[in-house]
Amino acid sequence: MVLLLLAYCLTAAALTGAQHAPRQNAPSPRHRLSPLDGSIIALPTADQLAFQDREMGILIHFEIATYLAIDGCNGVPGLVPAPALFDPTLLDTDQWMASIAASGARYATLVAKHNCGFTTWPSQVSFKTRDNTTSGYNYSVADSPVKGVDVPGMFSASAEKAGLGHGFYYSTVVNNFLNVQNSLVNATWAPGEIRISNETYDEIVIAQLTELWTNYGELTELWFDGGYSASQQAKITQLLQEHQPHACIFNSCDAAGTACLSPNSIRWIGTEDGLPNEEIWSTGVTNDGGSPTSPFFAPAECDTTLQAGIRWFWAAGQPLRPLSEMIEVYHQTVGRNCLLELDLAPDRSGLVPAAHAARYKALGDFLRACYGPGSAVGGTAANTTTTGVSVALAFEVPTAVDRVVIMEDQTQGQVIRAYEVWARVVDASGANGTLNVPLKLVSRGSSVGHKRIDLFAAPILVTEVVVNATKFVDTPVWRSVTVHLCDGLA
Ligand SMILES: *[C@@H]1O[C@H](CO)[C@@H](O)[C@H](O)[C@H]1NC(C)=O
Ligand SMILES: *[C@@H]1O[C@H](CO)[C@@H](O)[C@H](O)[C@H]1NC(C)=O
Ligand SMILES: *[C@@H]1O[C@H](CO)[C@@H](O)[C@H](O)[C@H]1NC(C)=O
Ligand SMILES: *[C@@H]1O[C@H](CO)[C@@H](O)[C@H](O)[C@H]1NC(C)=O
Ligand SMILES: *[C@@H]1O[C@H](CO)[C@@H](O)[C@H](O)[C@H]1NC(C)=O
Ligand SMILES: *[C@@H]1O[C@H](CO)[C@@H](O)[C@H](O)[C@H]1NC(C)=O
Ligand SMILES: *[C@@H]1O[C@H](CO)[C@@H](O)[C@H](O)[C@H]1NC(C)=O
Image (cartoon, rainbow, N blue to C red; front, side, top):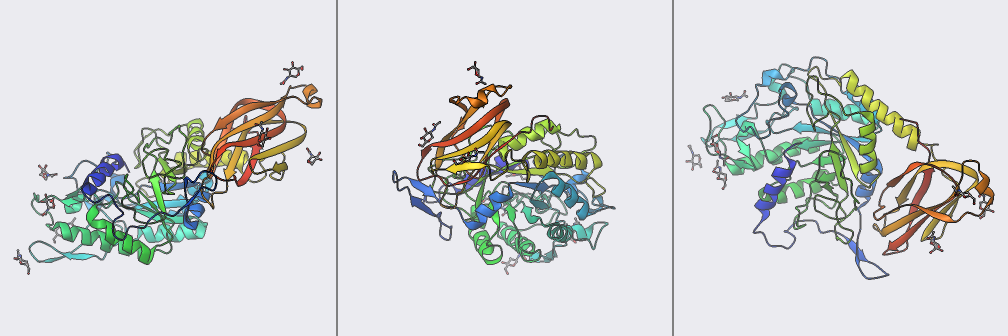
């Protein structure tokens, strides 16, 4: 991570000049027309819906940059750290999974190659240099003190054992080892540096993606930090269809929507602090809250760090963000229809540090207590009446609640465009419980999508809660409406 914004712009620039029609081979989005007003309703794939159901994942930063003081090789083109640095003597990917599961995450995406160019698997790719010699990719774990280890292999086995989805991050736009920035080989080489052509670079990318996508099982998510270049697009698209048609693809589409790698597209929310603070639609291709009228169903993913200062790789003594801030991150992401992807930074021994593990678990403990099975006040099958537009929950006695969780069934697209939450609020003595107090507006918003969580300023005592869709382009299909009381849990 880190160079996303910069490189994304460059990707867009590389595509400028292309016709503003879908490229040959670019998957086109599916949509239907609203029976109410004829507007476009983008349709999801089953893989996208299953991915949104995972709600929260982990992005693991662990490779040679873990052994640097700076946060990766980004923006330092000449830096090719010696492979001898990579020496995780206690590497234990099951220990990583313990923290991932404890946090409440349901998938993990591993950085398999970041911008230094080091691959944490023993890549077997060989290629022709400009002087017509054949070279192996001698900048991998096989050139390090832990030769024989295959980090993606260990990671994949551990994730499968833990019942978590797994996938890979492979940066296609930067590779210091091969003297590549912005997907282009710089023709000024330092002495001893491997000299390749631009065409050979693209071949190496495809060959290494093929290794990653064919040797480690069915992958949940694939990450293109900074996107991909126009010259790589068609081949990557084809490779995905061949080997990983079910994977969801981060940064799949360019901002104009003229090229997407897959119908299983996921977009970036545009910030790395995990606090986007906006309405977030499941549709759109721009790096923000998206657009309800876009023909592209491409849910947003909100990636952020546990270490303070948006630090992705482990750093000695780096403070962690407090639990209260991580809970706020959860509510601004998962609670606003964004997939939350939280960084995990194993240290130089190859383990998640104890303080990090404790913070992931504290977050998961809060999420399980507040939102987990059995947490809904009145039970999930509370006395619910659904009339299409409206869902009403009735309580026999005045009941304390401090938030509402609303889920929309998006199988036929995201159709609710605005909603209101009303409640019959009685006083603490319960005296008003016998009175038919009028409904009072307690929250409102626009996007619901996979999930929407609205927090009330303080707990209220209610006898009824009504959620109404006030704008919609087809009859709303509610997946669930529940109320919770989490005040005092964290
Ligand atoms: C490499 O091979 C190509 C094609 O066979 C040839 O055109 C080129 O001159 C060779 N380059 C060197 C440095 O020998
Ligand atoms: C890779 O091999 C080349 C050619 O043998 C050598 O010059 C270079 O130093 C090696 N690179 C690394 C990182 O070991
Ligand atoms: C190529 O590398 C040289 C030497 O490091 C540097 O001065 C130059 O700016 C680079 N060119 C590009 C386009 O990045
Ligand atoms: C790669 O392409 C870029 C842009 O056309 C060019 O500036 C660069 O010199 C090329 N690299 C090599 C090694 O030919
Ligand atoms: C549940 O709904 C039924 C029918 O609307 C009603 O008769 C009953 O009193 C309700 N129960 C509660 C707990 O509100
Ligand atoms: C309860 O009823 C009393 C008397 O009608 C009213 O003054 C008070 O505001 C009500 N409390 C709530 C929470 O609605
Ligand atoms: C909610 O919607 C229903 C159905 O349109 C309507 O009868 C009811 O008055 C609405 N309730 C509120 C509080 O807006």
